Length: 313
Length: 301
Image 1 (cartoon, chains in turn purple, blue):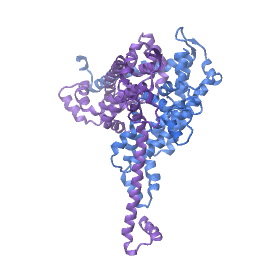
Image 2 (image 1 turned 30 degrees about the vertical axis):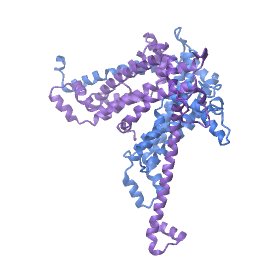
Image 3 (image 1 turned 45 degrees about the vertical axis):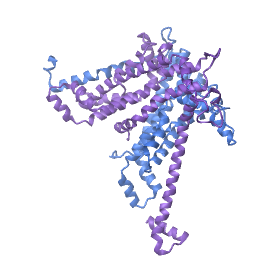
């Protein structure tokens, strides 16, 4: 149908010799296709440039001398490459200390979430018990409750426990369930592991939780990696909770410390001055590198997260 | 354990299950249900943290309904932002995914490039954009000037500040890409073939096959997008802290101020509950609308 239609249109336009019609049409289609493809790749290239440019300029500015940060037209690489912008910046506040703090929190949350979410997920994936469906619904329903609704009472709770200005409010809750989304994701993955493995282990005398530890978890490395990566991203970027719970400078996470440093003038060149843009871009680059690098190397786990959780409907 | 030996197999499994669920159940009571109830109670009190909460009835809610112009401003800001940023996320993200679904070469390269802004920490996004959108010397405005356009003052202008925030969220639109791509790749090719046989052109095929088959994911992106934009905090806190004036006072920013700067925990709890109710209503409403507009394969009865 559509072939004869375009043949008529083509004929009306250019009137090719009848015996050449087929080849002519094919060439015309090929030409259209080529044109379409060119536009497609052009569009993709333009989009890529627009999306990547801010990051490129961030890195570029972080190596520029102060006076060249707003230079126009901008140069990608300034005449002088000031790598010491970075050193200058992290000498102005407890950079390494706060990096260590962030990593401590990340590791704590990872441990809590991986253990606790996989335990909970395992129970729902493998065990039969009265109340299972209702409890699983309860797990899913906690996804609906925004963190900010429970933020104030949690803050008051940790205040009463004397846990303010420590990492405990940021870590300990993750040992208790590990978050509905991650429970769900791990459960979906565990259910794909054939029960034959469990049965074989049970015959060898393994108990319920030994099966989780010795059979299920070793076979679930991709799913656990997905959880670990998502967790890293979330904790590395976390801002509101550390802002509320950590008050003293030696406890700050990297994001909070950078924010504090950027806000408060520092002693430099014989006077108190706010940090310069090249220094701020240096710290923004430092914040950006770990998640972006991690994303580069672990993309397949991101994709897997989407596939396992099966958010298709 | 020896005492387990006396139990039936089913009883033992049940026992194991509840032992395994203990951390979750404790966490649910201590960190979710308890706080939820307690914050509901707090919303009916005056509480400055320093002295015990005092019951004040509906005072907080009355203040919300009538007396608090700032609350309405923060809602207005948040709703306007949501109403522009979410459709951009949904539509532009979908368009990108459609482009990448045209059997392009080097898919993983493009996908990486498009998705990357979404993994950049909010703080870094905030700094980069407040630098690029400087009103006089920023890269964007200098470029606009070079082609003869006057650049707005962005973060410095109450009328433009939300546009700057929308720009930032649009930049990270690729975050929806993986979901969309996996949905597009999940559309069975038989459907396209069948529709080709029926003589449908590319546009018809898109309307009749692609769109309905991927509508659950579009809906999911829409819903999670709404929930996300209602909870903007970090970028706003770092760039404008609500200014100029109250032009970018996002809801959570005001909630944070109320609770942790003005020490009005009772009122902040009431605000948190209002947020909860708003999100709940949005979710339920969308689910209701989705029943007639979203196509769930295999869900027809």
